[in-house]
Image 1 (cartoon, one colour):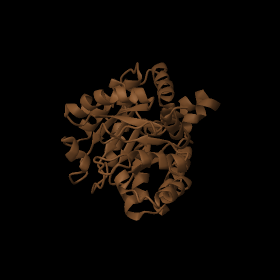
Image 2 (cartoon, one colour):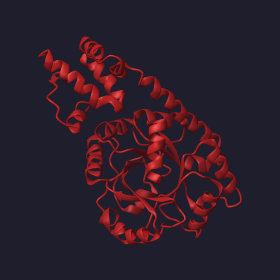
Image 3 (cartoon, helix red, strand yellow):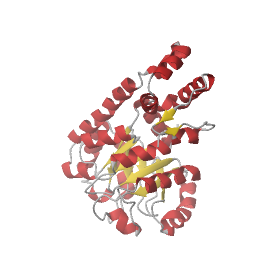
Image 4 (cartoon, helix red, strand yellow):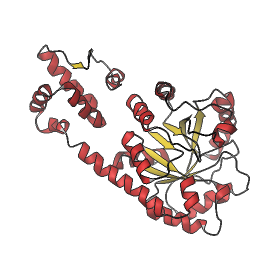
Amino acid sequence: MTTHEHLLQIKRDRGAGYLLLVDPDKVEKVKFPAFIREATTAGVDAFLVGGSLILSNVFNETLKTIKENSKAPVIIFPGSVSQVSPDADAILFLLLISGRNPDHLIGNQVIAAPIIKRMGLEAISTGYMLIDGGNVTSAEFMSNTKPIPRDKLDIAVAHALAAELIGLKMLYLEAGSGAKQSVPDEMIKKVTQYCSLPVIAGGGICSPEEAWNKIKAGASFIVTGTVIEQNSNTRIIKSLHRQFTNHKNYRRKSLMTPLHATVQSRDQFISDSLKESSETKLQILHRCSGEISKAIDLIIHAFKAKKKSCCVGMAAVPPMHNTSQRNLLFA
C-alpha cells in the first residue's frame, strides 16, 4: 500500500485524519525521539516534515529519527527544492496554484522531478493554496505570491476545480504557519461541495474545537505545527485525536438516514422522499456523500415517473446526466 493509499484508507475508515507538521529547525534534539513516540501513541496518523526556510543541517536526521521511533508515514512537506530525501516515505509534490509565480507552478517541480524519480520517492501531487490568515506568513513571503482573500469563496472553488481537472491527487488549504486566523470553515465547505479531492487544512488551528469545525466543514486531514511547538507536549495531540474519533461517530450517526433504507425498501424510500420537502431531502443527501448519486437518480426517476418537477428554492432542478451536474445542485 502506498502512502497516498494509506491516507485515503484513513479517510474512508474515520472520515478524517491528523497530520503533525515538524519543522527541523525547531526540533529539540534530546527530547525529540520521546516526543515522536508519544505523538504516535497519542494518535498522529502521519508526520509532515519541512519548512519555508531551514537554516540547520538536520533535515535528513529529522526524517530518520521519526522513522526510527514511529510506524506512522513520514511525508516531506517541502519549502524548497533542497528538501528532498530518500529517508521519507513520500513527498507532497506541491503546485502553488493560488499564486502566479512560475517557479512554484512548474520551475521548481521540473528541477525536483528527476531527483525524486531517481530516489524512488513516492510523489503525491498536491494543489497548494495559500489563504489569507490575517498576517504575512513565511510561506507567503518566501513564495512571493498573494494569498486568496478569506471572503472570496468563488476564487477558492475555481482554483480547487482547476487542481482536480489537472489531475492532482489532493488539495492543501494553507493559512500559513503561525497565522492569526485559520482557513475559514465556509471556504472548506464550499470547496468540498464542488471538488472531490481530499482537502488538507492547516495553519492557525490552535484548539481541538477549531479542528473539529474544519472536519465538519469537510476537511479530510487537519495539520497542526506551531501550537504543538509552543506547548511541546502531547496533551493537545490527544485532544485533537479525540475529535477524529468523535467524527467517526458523527459520520456513523449522520449516515443513519432514509438513504440507507434503499437497501431494505427502494420503493418505500422513493415514496418517503416524495412526501418530504425537497430542501430537507437534499440536505440529507448532502450529508451522505457516499450515496448521493444513487439517491438523486432514484428521486429524479420517481419525479419523472409521476411527471412532477422538483424545485430547490426558486430554481427547478434540470435533468442531470453526470456527476458534475449533480454537484451543482449543492452550490
